[in-house]
Image (tube, rainbow, N blue to C red; front, side):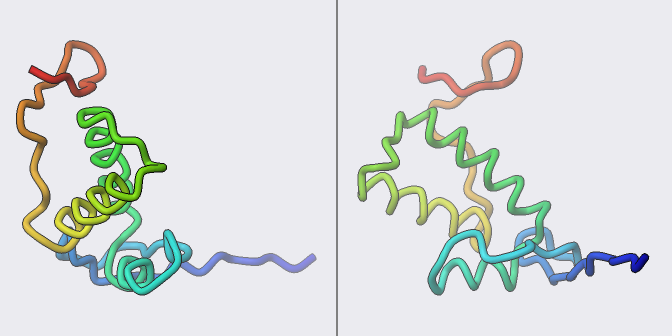
Length: 103
């Protein structure tokens, strides 16, 4: 019986500034999806997913709204390729799981 090993691709992560396992495939279609795939590690992508949930909840984003999609895309680019994308204005962790709340 043949044994198959999954290859682990490495990427020099633009967010975490070190070589880490790459994503298995682009996270979405298009030029930006390819840029993320080629330059962002699984670890950094997981951090973005957590941060995006925080943003969606904090701002009450409706992802069916094109303006919300544009906002989230801009935040993603800043988080992954810019200065890190800090916490939203007025955000503070609630007791427990640290979910966002508005002040």
